[in-house]
Length: 290
Image (cartoon, rainbow, N blue to C red; front, side, top):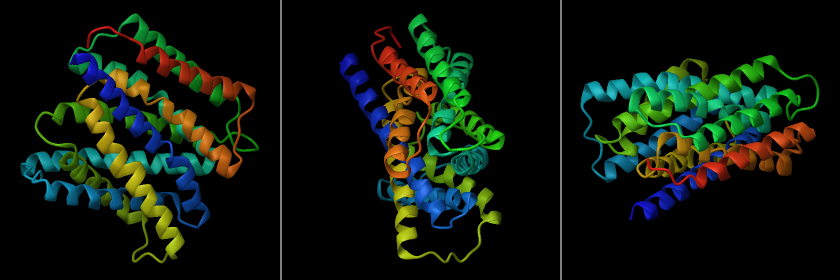
C-alpha cells in the first residue's frame, strides 16, 4: 500500500510539473500581446484564485478560521505576489527557458526547510540528486541563457528570487495541509497575492479575446490545476522528493519555448538540462523510508 501511494504521489507531482512547464511558453504569448509582466502575474493569480474559491465553495472547504485566512493571505504577498511577479520579469528579461530552470534552485531551500521544520532525513541519494540539479542549473546560467545577446543580471536575479519564493511553498503548505484542503489554502493565498499586485495593474483591462484566451490558459493550467496536482502529490511523498521530481518541469519548459519561440541553449545549457533530468531519475528510484 505504501509503495502504491508513493507511485501515485510521483504521478501527481509529475502532472504538476507538466502543467507548470507551460508557464514560460504561455507567458511569452501574453507578453507578446502587450500584457506587462506584473499584469500577467496578476491575471494568472486572479483567475486561479476564482477557480480555487469556486472549488472550495462547491466542496464545502471554505470554513477557514479568520486568523488562518489572514495568515494565508499574508504569505500570499510573498509566495504569490513576489513569486509570480519575479517569474514574469525573469521570463521577459532572460527568456522562458532560463527562467524556468533558475526557478529550480528551490530544492536546496526545500531541503533546508524540511530538515529544520519537519526533521526529514536527507539521504545520500537525495543529496546527490540535489547537487546534480544544482549543477545543471549553474550550467544553464553560465551558458549565457536562452535569449540572444548579453545575459540579463536582473533576469537571473529575478529567476533566483522566484526559486526562493517557490521553495517556501513546500513547508508552508505541508504545515497547513492537515487542517485545510488545497483549494482553501490556495484560494486565500492567491487572494493575498492579488492584493499585492493590484497597484501595478490598470483596471479595467482592455484585452482582445485571444489575449484573454492566453491569460485564461495561464490561470487554469499553471495555477489552478497545477497546484491541485501538487497538493495531491504532497499527501503521499516527502517535500524534498516532490521538489526534485518537479525538476522535470524545466526540461519540458525548455522544450516548449524551443518549439514555439525558437529559444535554445548552447551545448553547456543542454548539458545542464540533462543533469536536471538525471536528478529526477535518481530521486525517483530512491527506496529509502520517508
